[in-house]
Length: 83
Image (cartoon, rainbow, N blue to C red; front, side):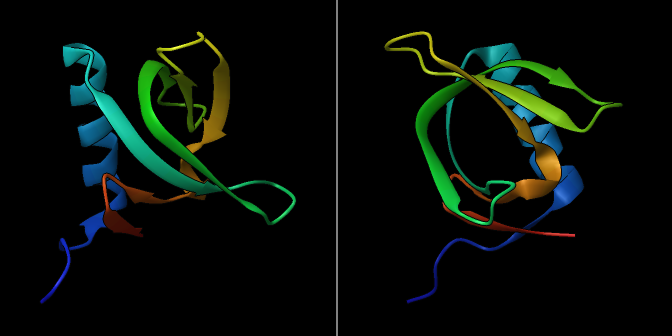
């Protein structure tokens, strides 16, 4: 059985914008600048910097925030992201 179909980078951006407007949580997997992987399960989009290429994520449980470069995101809600 196949998994969810991959999505394009621009579709990922629209998905994050929609989640921001609707206050929906996302599951994101991304690379860190040191080459390690990091996972954000059930985080909210706090704000997006479209020109800067960053997304600000916030954990709804403890309000912890992370600034993630969009280009480092390789999976969102179980769907692989391609360029």
